[in-house]
Image (cartoon, rainbow, N blue to C red):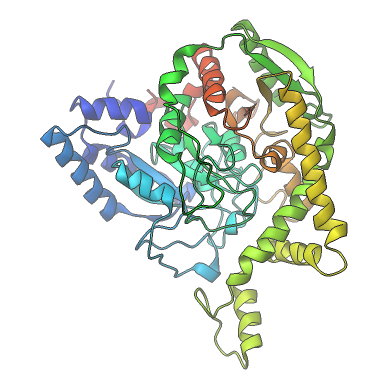
Amino acid sequence: MNVDPSSLTLASASRRLSRRELSAGELVEACLRRIEETEPRLHAFLAVSDGEARRQAAAADERLARGEPLSPLDGVPIALKDVFLTRGVRTTAASRILENFVPPYDATAVARLRSRGAVLIGKTNCDEFAMGSSTENSAFGPSFNPWDPSRVPGGSSGGSAVAVAAGQCLAALGTDTGGSIRLPASYCGVVGLKPTYGRVSRYGIVAYASSLDQVGPFTRDVRDAAILLEALAGHDPRDATSAPIETPNYESLLESGLGPLRIGVPREYFEEGMQPEVDSSVREAIAVLESLGASVETVSLPHATYAIATYYLIATAEASSNLARYDGIRYGRRAAGAESLLDAYRRSRDQGFGAEVKRRILLGTYALSAGYYEAYYGKAQKARTLVRKDFEDAFARCDLLVAPTAPTTAFRIGEKLADPLSMYLSDVLTISVNLAGLPALSLPCGIDGSGLPIGVQLIGKPFGEAALLGAAYAYEQATEWHRARPPSLAEAAT
């Protein structure tokens, strides 16, 4: 049977390109066809760079023809969440206030992909300014889950997860502030990696909460995540929070096996209210890891119960500060008919920001206001220290933590829009990782009775991505869940 090139993994496509069994042009055309076929019902993209993608593919084929040594990303179509600045290509952060903003430079992550010959096929949909858990807060309409278009794909990086799951590209980049890579990865049945804070440069990313945001990849399997992380990671002097730590060859370390791995299972992450199929699938995944030689013990993260409140004070406070620059004067949308400078600010921000962004700005401004700063923001920072200390204590006994990525599978479009608190609780199992600055990865571990993917979350020590990827790879090789595709795409799977 002929294999649709858009169904390939990044690694397998790279091998076929290097052997001249496939051209970059053919690969890009296959993805563009898939986009054309599926976008009307999925809405993963805000912009498709078809002309530029074809030019980049032609350049990759010329390098192939000359016999130049190629990077594993050369000629491979990759999509970008629309919070990454892209020189000459509109970047909106899914907001009306940036609807016509065209950046004059590339984000560091984008520049690193370009330098390795990746084909940047387009910008993907997301929650406005990355604020959301369902990609329903986009000013340009929601994205839809390819496993069931009546369901959300997760957020905020939902469009990137949809694009990878639907075969519209071979990999994609997202950002994760409280679960915004891992949650969509779980809901869409792909691999999503949130690296350690500081592992990948944030320079050129439209900021939501600067002490929490981190860049990471969506891929179809763990090997592809390792390849992409290696391309993205490394110190960047333009990002003051970028860590000057050497980047390992993550792919070469995948085959080393689990060894005497000690796995901790957080008691607080298996509470009442979890979907039974999620609970059983994750416990089965833990049993698989144990059968591969890992030892398993229960650990406690006693301050996990405070993570949601802590996060929504810190993140909204930082959002209030970061979004103050969008005032309709320096750049971005400017409202017409203003009668004064203050009126211009008021009208531009009212018309440019959506309801969820306004809600978080108001929450954050209140938390930072005189008389309330220490009671709210100051106390939240102290609670954050306690959350981080819980992880330190757990990692004194364990090498890795394993838990569900989300308490349920993907919920229905519109189900939680009228209940912000219920929406916020979608991230209850992912937020603590961001507060502690740790690396974490979600990968498929099951399918529920409605045919929706289930994700298991692996949490590692700071800058322990190699061990995280190694354990995920060992699990993946022992199971078949990563091969599952949305029903309409299953016939094209490798």
